[in-house]
Image 1: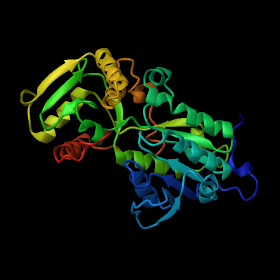
Image 2 (image 1 turned 30 degrees about the vertical axis):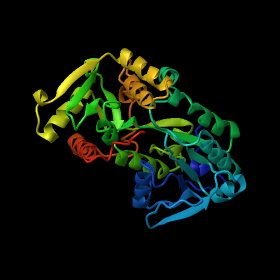
Image 3 (image 1 turned 90 degrees about the vertical axis):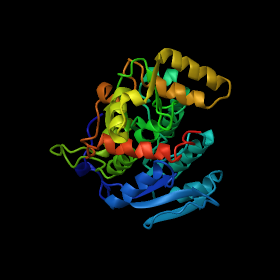
Image 4 (image 1 turned 45 degrees about the vertical axis):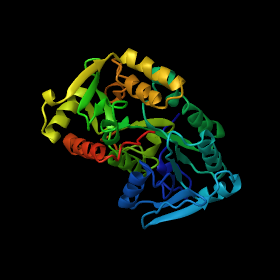
Length: 339
């Protein structure tokens, strides 16, 4: 397909996203996306919430309350939007995102950021082995089938501050009891992101020009990511790298911790067996463990390369977010994470 340029578009063409709607604006990642959108100040931000919702939104955010089961009302709420950003928890009703995508198509919303925040779902092996990754394919396919919107997925890995302190099921650390389970020998690195970095990534993406101005314009544009993933990360670290950071911020030594190991293949199978028995923790175990396989599936910084520089993302301090994670784990904030 020939490269399109803004200079060749019909009169009245807008080369910027001006209106952004977001679902889950008060959620784990949504609130950081909203914060960065408001900080950038380039778009009018609308939060789409359920009727009866009580979440408080920051100043500068318009709120539209609507029933997701009312297609016409949902379509009307999205009319005039240039982009829809969907953020939802893993236990949200599976048809909820479908309804949002269908309404976005009916409202002619040109860009949809589906609920794609995490693993590299362009990786076929990772999709095949982890069902929660594979089910997301249907939403990208639906967007393309409807033909009214383009999608952009955010491959950011796991949220570092939640995963490090999230317990033995995630990155293998139990902060309160000072125990650590290494997956294999703990040296396999993966790409991981902080929530503020994810917020900046999304806000900076929608802040890009939609098309390059002309053939002399070499700057990144949103169309570079049309029906593709943007790859962003804060850190590329192994469990042993994380441990060194934990030791620094807690002022402890390795001898103060109980450190064991478990083969990744065995751990992955154990997680699957738990989940098949109805134990939701098994899904977390399998999901996280699969990203530490030596095939580099979880290290997309190596396999894909990062878009951090294109999006103007800053370098972050590992110990700063390790310290935050330790605090969240110790005060109990993370006890219900992922449950």
